[in-house]
Image (cartoon, rainbow, N blue to C red):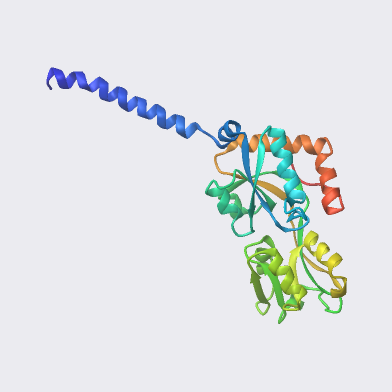
Amino acid sequence: MTAAAFLRVPRRLALAAGLALLTAGAQAQTALDSITKSKTIKIAVPTDYPPYGFVGPDMAPQGLDVAVAQLIAAKLGVKAELVPVTSANRIPYLQTKKADLVISTLGKNPDREKVINFSAAYAPFYQAVFAAKSLTIKSWADLGGKSVAVTRGAMEDQELAKVAPPTLEYKRFEDNNATIAAFAAGQTQLLATSAAVAGNLMQRNPGLNTEYKLLLKDSPCFVGVAKGEDALLAKVNAIIAAAKAAGELEALSKKWLGRGTGDIPL
């Protein structure tokens, strides 16, 4: 090796070390860092799922999930940028960084836990099968040969597939508005949805004589956080715990659902 080549070695090593430090710094930039720096947090919320999330008369999103999103942003001291999502795209939005958090009636299950993390629960939620009072449904076997409206990819779609007989006819729709509209129009005999959404349907369409039939799943709502964002998850959990202790979550649940949070897991 020549003297000139020997002298170039430390420079190359220094350059490599500098690049490594820059790379490490970039990797260390967390979602919480970006949120703190930009003073904005992008939160995915539903806009077609009253009373959890819907568009009000002023065309602004409102509902329980929207209120929780705003509460978390306020506690973080940043602005909430609400990102409308559907059941099918809410997790992909989190994975592709289109959203920092998902607050969209998100239930926890083993498959989802493989790809995202979950906060402590912030609200009650359960899914069930509903139908007209005149239709006798006392067991899963009674669903055989009937038709059901369900939102594609939603928790009730997944849970129904586990217990329903193979002769049940599914009519899947891309969002909850379409699902509810199909049932209300008589396109299906059954509706698989949340109790809150069904309650809203019953209030608006009393002539349908809809009632609860079978419980699919009791599944509290959790905030979805991307894998690797432990600092943000810890902040969200601390905010939820404090809001529960202060009665803020209880008040929001009573306002939007008509009942308290109950025994939701921390």
